[in-house]
Image (tube, rainbow, N blue to C red; front, side, top):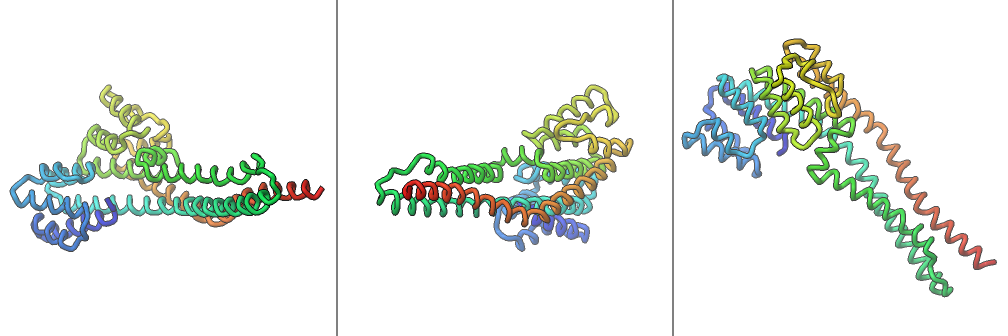
Length: 325
């Protein structure tokens, strides 16, 4: 799901409901102006269910929409303030999209470097192997040494392994989810997203245990999910204060816990403060990376080319000296 489109939809839907337009009619009008896709199909089915008399809570559960979104819309409907909830959700998803779009841009430079280096390395390998193997060694009747084969094919194989690992981390959801909580800028973006979700639920009357359970489900399969489960267990054991319930670990650092716990009884404000701090930290780290990426890319690519050319030239020069002597 594209969060920017989803955020715009919720913003428009909240404004239409606030102006007195019925929910079914607002959904129908917005779907007519959306492009074809999975989101439009789900919203059209939601509108059809509501039109047939299905309660909003039941209709939302049947649709393939984010669990967090479904839960928050249900809370907004129960509190008779659905337009305000939709606008807050639009701001939430717009912030998530802005942060992750910036961080995804960080992956463009390493990917370009690896692809360019792999292509150039393969070209140089084929060129030198043809010049040295076919046109020179075969004419002289000398078999190609194994050391020369390793020096020629070693760099493209190594670069190819790095490229494959990079693409695997980008394209496999499980690997991407795991790396998000390990890479600095991405981890801070994840912390900001978790804190923002917790703040939104708690500020709208959500229960702390339910909020932790929903976020734990959202982060299933990560270190954050395990630690949130421990928090819930501590809460069930009677540790009502956040300082006693929450324990820092691999996912949640002491600063995060201090920012939330420093708010006292108003945990919603504490999570909101943590979301702002870690969102700013993620943006700052991404900007630092972008400022250093281009010169670093040139240096890395030049080093790769030098590593590719130098062994082949050295081997070729040694071979010529041996033949001449």
